[in-house]
Image (cartoon, rainbow over all chains, first blue to last red; front, side, top):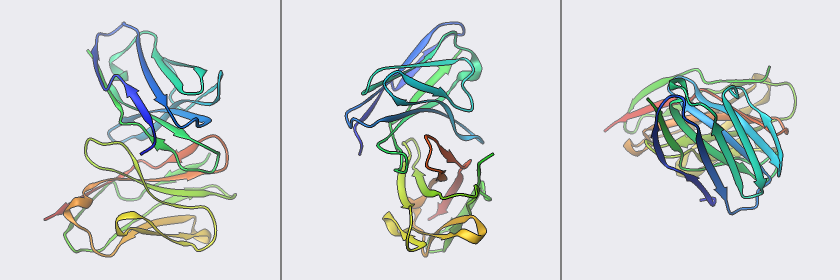
Length: 112
Length: 112
């Protein structure tokens, strides 16, 4: 499996609190992605990065921000968590534009 | 807009039955095609991929898929399923850009 570590793996927090999820890779891949997975919706792209400090929005970016200050780390921040952001979050990496993505183990986030 | 459609949301089969999961995409240019599998509680894993050449692609665990360009389809097949194939299956399409478009997934349950 590709060297991808997501932390934390599980988190429970309250509405209105800030939350940061971390994705760390050891593959030196250029592209990194954050998805959320919800029943009936499959995978939805939140944000992605195509290089250090180069990020862009996906289809469900409202309420989320990201940062990539190093090749190996891609952070996803919920500035003020809401219950609708309860989900499983997956990080993925990809070496080049036409290669498959490889996924981390996911973070299960519950917002009460 | 580019999209990926998986026709069956839930499929129930008995062991040894044959499997075919449908996938259609909407994009007129060159595509890279993928099938991923997600076992319960795990992350997505690549089953197989198509970039070019022979439209019949063989993947891991006895799965195969056929790319039919005229139908914009990339259906997944397995001649004889096992209980251990119970999982969710995602079709995905890359168009050479930064993003990969995922279908909503098909949940397969195999009865022992």
